[in-house]
Amino acid sequence: MGLGDKARNAAEKLRGKGKEAAGETSGDDRLKAEGKGDQAKSDLKQAGEKIKDAFKKKG
Image 1 (spheres, rainbow, N blue to C red):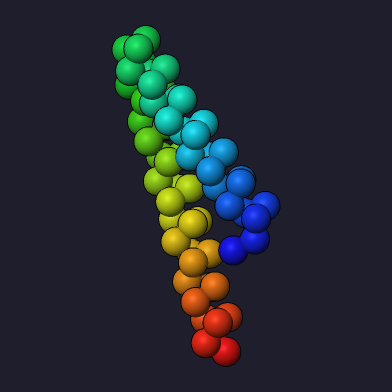
Image 2: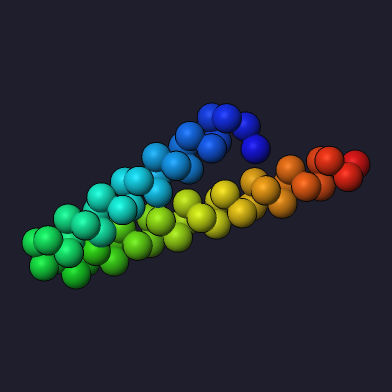
């Protein structure tokens, strides 16, 4: 996984945490759910990159 990809995924996860916190504070369930979704998407991207890296090392 490239450094840029790691940074983008970390930033996306951080934005998701911010949205979730803002939704929690304001009582906005939609914003809270959107934040959780952003975090999950970031985690999936990170997992996909790790799998690609593992195959590159074997090849």
